[in-house]
Length: 233
Image 1 (cartoon, rainbow, N blue to C red):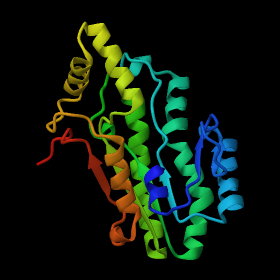
Image 2: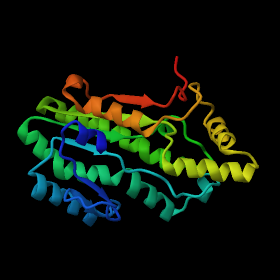
Image 3: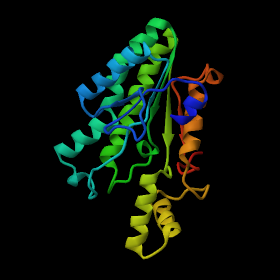
């Protein structure tokens, strides 16, 4: 958000709880629900008159560990409601305006978990993100001839505040320090050749580039930013 604003964009953001600082372009809404998505879409039209760039950042998981057998109907519905349906609903409301104006960029933030799921812990999350990736590819093929670009960004482990707290909990359970907790998490992912998680600013910079005119011929593709976690040929 801050980077886009620094680059001169008007940015409308949303979350379940109000922002810490007053912001007339912030909308409190629960995007896991249809009414929440409708509230945000209406605010985009009312406050901005439309949109040129959509970045779908929402994602996460609250599903329990224990493999597929631990995932009941409620867990599957929750993962889809958080990681797939908000993007579909907001695109359905906002992309037609992009098509009408003949330009626009949609960025779907997926995950390397779609390629490297952890069977004990991320089956539902990874499945939802994989579905988002396929949907994104299909949308890109449909709207590219109409001037709208659709791209995907697939992060690996990003060192957000939440991931630091996770590393602290892992470290405490293992009787080690924060660096040791980070190492345990990286090892669980099969290792990160770069030796560290990605930083939020690095992911934001990639998204900003893909949304810019410098990437005007890029559409329908997925860009992995994971420090080399996903092994490739």
